[in-house]
Amino acid sequence: MVKKVALISLGCDKNRVDTENIMYRLNAGGFELTDDMSQAEAIIINTCAFIKSAEKESIDNIFAAARLKSEGKLKKLIVTGCLPMRYKEKLGELLPEVDAFVGINDYSAICDIIESSDKMHLSGNDLPTEKRILSTPPHYAYLKIAEGCDNYCTYCTIPFLRGRYRSREMNSLLREAKFLDECGVKELILVAQDVTNYGKDLYGKYELVNLLKKLLASCDFEKIRLLYCYPEIVTDELIDFVAGEDRMAKYMDIPLQHVSDDILKAMHRRSTHAGIVSLFDKLKSKGIAVRTTLIVGFPGETEAQFTELEEFVKEYRPAHLGVFAYSREDGTVAAKMKNQIPTRVKIDRVNRLGRLAEAQAKERNESFVGKILDVVYEGIDYDRNMFVGRTEYDAPDIDGAVYFTADFVDIGCTYKVRITGYDGYDLTGEAVK
Image (cartoon, rainbow, N blue to C red):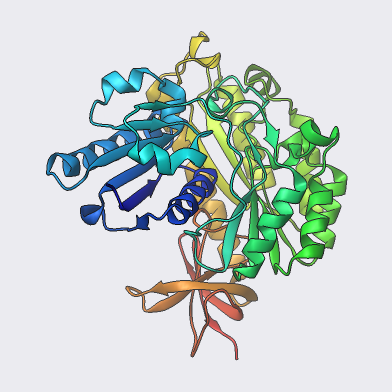
C-alpha cells in the first residue's frame, strides 16, 4: 500500500492550481504528502507540454523519478497534466516506467488511481475542488476561473490539450475565494488561458467585471491581480474598473504575440496594430502597468515586420516583456506553413528585442531611484543579506523584485521603501520608518 506521496508541478500557474487540487484530494484521502523524493512511495509529476522545451523538462523529470523507482523504494510513478493529454496512448509504449497517465479531467479519482493497475486515465469530466493545499507563500494564491481556450491560435496547442473554453460557475469561484480569504491570502491572482472571456459560455456575456465586484464585496483581499487578458476583450469598462478600484492591482498581463496585421492574421489573432496601439494608450493614461509576451520568427515574418514589432516596443515600452522564439509544434496549423524562419534568425531577433527590453528596464529602474514605493515583503535573500519583495506593478515569480533593508518585516505585509539603486531588472532600497 502506498501512503507517502511527493508531487512535482511543472509549467504555468494554472498547472500549479491543478497540483494544489491534487494535494487536497490526496490529503483528504488519507495520503501523507512529502517534499522528499527519496522518501516517497509514489511520485506524481504534473507536466507541461505547451512547447518542446516544456516537454523536455517534463521528460527529464520523469526519467529522474524512474531512476528512484529502479532503486526499489518508489512503488508508483504517475504522470498527470498536459503531456498525457497531448500524446495519450503513445506514452504507454514510450515510457513503460510510468505506472499511470492521468488527464486533466481525472484528478477527482487520483486516490483510486494510485492503487489501480490501469495505466490510462484520460476520460473523466472533473470539476476542481473548492479547497486546496496552497503551495504559494501564505499571502498570495491563484484562482483559476476557467479551463481551456476557444481562440485556436495557429501556433498554440492549448485547445487540443485543455479543450474548449469552460468558465467555472461564479458561486463556486466565490466559495473558493472565501476559503482562500479565510486562509489569510492577501493577494488573489485570477488566471485562465483568457480571463477576459470569463462567463461568455455560461451566461451569454462577459462577466469578469461582475465577478471582480463580487469578489471584492465578499472577501477582504488587499489586492486582486489579472493575468492573461486577451487584447480585444480588454474593454473600457474593465480598464476603468481596474484603474478606479483601490484594491485592484494596477497591472494586466496581456499577451500580444505580435503587432503586424499580417502576422496577427496568420496567427489567427483577432487583434490589429491600430487596436493594440489604442489599448496601450488607454492603459498608460490610467496608470496600469502591462506585462506582455511577443513571439518572433513566426513563419513568414519579414525583417520589416520584425522591425514594426521592435518600433512598437521602443514607443510603447511595456513595463515587463517576455520574448520567445516561435516553436514549431506538431499538430498546429503554423507547423505546416511555408517560409519557416531559420533558427539563427529567430535567435538573433530574440536577442535584439531582449537587449531593447533590458535597456528599457534599466531606464525604468533609474526613474524609481529616490522615490518611495509600497513593497510587499515576501522572503529573504541570504546571499545579499536583504529582504525581498515586490510592488503592485510586479507579479510573483515572473517580474522584477525589490531588495531592501529594514529593522523588522512580516511576511505578506506592505512597507514603504525608498529606492536607492537597482541591479538589472531588480530594485534596491531601504524601508522608511
